[in-house]
Picture (cartoon, rainbow, N blue to C red):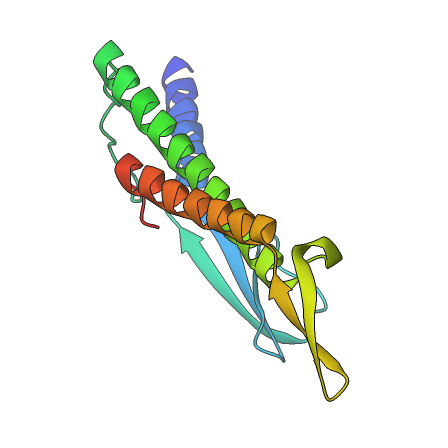
Length: 156
């Protein structure tokens, strides 16, 4: 009786191994060509059903263990991240300077221009000295921001 029990246990283990080593997946393709996958066979599906038997033991990979990150590598990463953040901040500063200059050029205020002459009843706008200084400062701000960005490794 002991021999038959051992044989039964071996047969049971072999069946369990067979079930565990094979899995079935169903590929479902509907009339519009949309593909989905299911672990269960659909009962009422209006489209093509393809049975796929997968052996998980055949689809294995041995991946390398990741190497620990050294302190010097952490410092390099932190320095790179800081440099990227600095370049991003300088780019924003440059964009803001360019926007301020363009806005001042396109929309001078009433105090930025004076009206001169009366030819045929019309006057012409002449920029005031303060407005010209304001534009010169804004242009200088743009140049400084471009140079700082270039020096930090970004491109203006």
